[in-house]
Length: 189
Ligand code: GRF
Image (cartoon, rainbow, N blue to C red):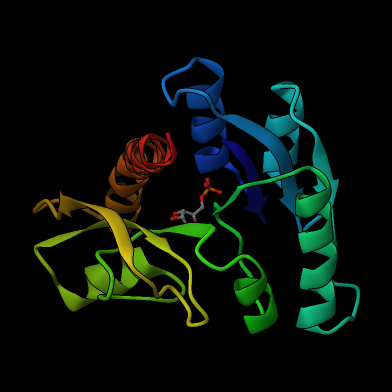
């Protein structure tokens, strides 16, 4: 399974996925390319350190659809079979979602459908929930929406701050993304 990962920032999920593929924990899979819409994304260095090809495709005032077409072309050129969004901070165009229908997955730091959008951990914290978590799901044309692949609950502890809760969710995200990709990989066998 050849995958492409889209990032905009830190890239810790990208690193976790890449390491799990390189070690064989996710079998018969390889990260073909990491694409960022931000030239300064920290995750680009993490990818290069792992010997993974990186490409920067900036928006540069173009329409969402034009930007996404260039990203799609870079993915297709490399024969990518599955696209993983990992902290990619742009909503994808409907054209892109249709072009790669059923082949795009995302991770989100809440138990979707609860708390879509930005700062999901803070949204959950402020709402006073006792349990939140993270979700890996197929991407459709709506934000943080589409069929769920796996979810993991994370309790909010009595002395949690938004920061400590966010960090515990992030630790679970890495394991959940790996588990979801193992599941998808076993289904294409
Ligand atoms: C993660 O919390 C992910 O769920 C959200 O953005 C964050 C990205 O973190 N979509 P990283 O870039 O993978 O470290």
